[in-house]
Image (tube, rainbow, N blue to C red):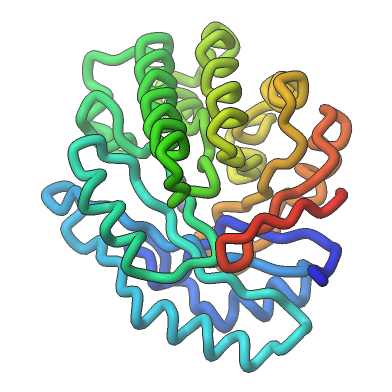
Length: 277
Ligand SMILES: [Zn+2]
Ligand SMILES: [Zn+2]
């Protein structure tokens, strides 16, 4: 029996290259804010030339999670997850890594497009909001089609699609605007493919504490997903620091319900549980 309550299925600790957060403090914070569970989705990025110190140390992460589980008992679910950076030319190695290890949840995220990292400011030279948004969403579509094709062959290594319109966080940062709605056809195709592939999109609330008035994706896209037959999404704060754990999740849950998605999808040992919100 899986406990009701909110699950933050997108959390980073010092086991990710871009976070200094102590996993024990993260768990304490999750308990303090009343979460039912959280999943550590540490970064797995194979482009060593751009992010040379991004190492996914499975043994260390698994040991951390096991220790935390023992410490908190039934008060909180602590999941072992991974946020895989989609790299079309590295998928064989990525799949091999996933096959060789046990996870609660595997998230696929696009952090690269145009063959460069999104977080690199230099990448944005010559790009504008509209072009970047289109190219980013096309890459996300390519990623979810990859997952769908695997599923057609009976393989389901991925469970979650991370922040499907992450590009808007950067266009807002660099150009003070975002234009995802202009490409609603692409968003629709991404969401339809998620439904076909049985890949759960997340509602990522990190933008709510940054410069945007909406999560990733926005309510209109969640409504679209519901119309396409989607019943459940995942909630994630994308916390990289302790005080962001669970941030925006209650608001996100309300948004999902209002938009016609009645459940949150929670993964434990790769099994999906749909919990009514
Ligand atoms: Zn990410
Ligand atoms: Zn993340």
